[in-house]
Length: 365
Image (tube, rainbow, N blue to C red; front, side, top):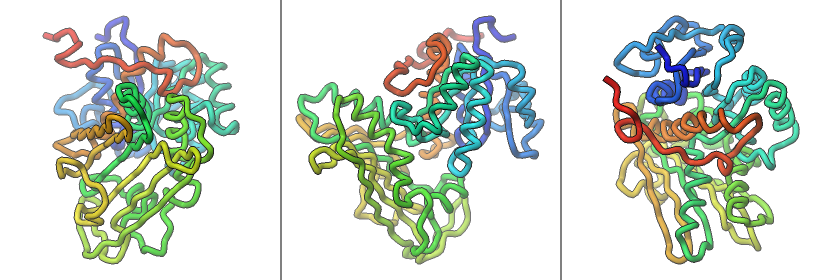
């Protein structure tokens, strides 16, 4: 039976992020998994433990009845459905949850990484929904968000001088089973004359510009503008992975930057370096340990600081590990948000929360 003080929490979506969210909520001493919402009819009725890849039954079966779940007025909701190709639907779903009074955490609404500078057509209805229902919202990224906001801000605090902040996601997609995003948003396996949706002009700024502005705000830096760079590489030979075949001559590597500019210089940079196979673009940066993925922050200054983090989940999968750390930041914020009151919060508002498990959690029988 749930402890009276636990927060009844819903997970909406059971893809890569949703699976991690179920596991994180199940492990959290202050949260209780109340429901799991799915869109795929084949997942309806399956136990959450099965959907999350756990080796035990959680006693919560997946449902597609959004109205019934929201009518139960859960204390919190982890919205893990993708917003990549359905941004308007994602905003509408989050607003529905906020109007019930729930705390909502999500990576799905890119412009709300930095709500201070979010477009009015997005932030206004979200703020109105939170005010109407008394809900609270925190949005943070999957790349992971903490690696592009609080981590670089922390590292600059231990440096004497800071000349540039560079945040890198370096990822080999070989084991990342997310074909819609990898093939069609990022463009892996597509002809080189096709423009991937994720890196069409202005799109990277729309997605990651908020993180650049958030770092600038944390450091008290006034940016002159935000610029984008893009480089693509083709596969020299056909490769096979969990998502199928990627043909020689198609896109095999993608590298882009979103740059915060001051006096003509890029002083804050969010950089993504992604490959469909580790043989692609060997001259591009790779994880320091030679593995399949890493999140790196480089502070150019005195001293020069480089921090590389490799997270693994689901049998050593580093893409899943990055997702899990992003989920951890969001899920662990729920108790603080529940006490903070109605509103829209960002990474500079939400404090770090110490972890739990064998460290920081009362042992169970």
